[in-house]
Length: 66
Image: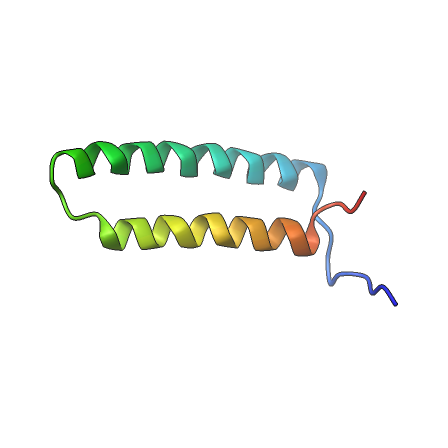
C-alpha cells in the first residue's frame, strides 16, 4: 500500500534544492582547502554532512516519484 507524502515539491523548489547541492559541493571544496592548511574543520564538516543528508531525505521523501 503506497501512501501519498504530506507535500510534494514544486519544480522551482527542486531547482533550488539542486542549487543547494552545488553550494554544498563548493563548501566541501572550501573545507578541503582549509584542511590542507591544517585547520580543524570537524564541526563545519559535521554541518556540511548534515546538509547533504537533509537534502537527500527531503528529495527522497517529497521529491517527484517517477
